Length: 158
Image (cartoon, rainbow, N blue to C red; front, side, top):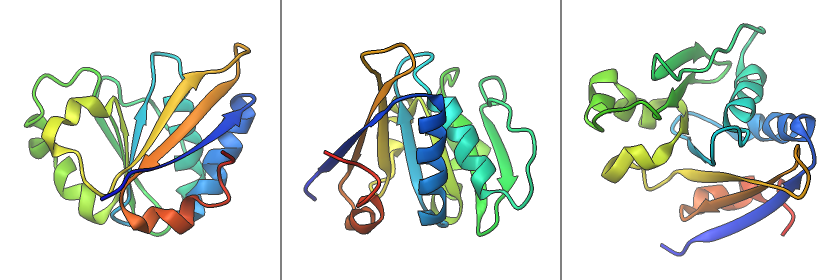
């Protein structure tokens, strides 16, 4: 499948949150978002804003750095937020049930390189890179599944 890319500038943490909130209504069960970027790049901030937008009522959204996975009852599907930074073995994902969640939940995966060959083919990759100013980010979306074509349109400006 051919790979598609779209980019956008996020001028501040608020702009990152706005982008996540705009993306939230476009997501449904079986969607996997792969969030990459260095420590402090904005992955967890984006995930928190997205999760809050998907919840029926506001609740605390802690980072899953130590628990590996946090789950939430979303409005339309269960939400799984995984931080794989401390993952020792990709097969732990099977034990946690994450690979099953790929097909019936909305999954947000930080440090997706730890998935190795378990990365879903239909995933949307979001790479957060530093911008020119401290709070700015360049966000690059990459996908090969045509199901993302229409949903990504309008979110990014190449």
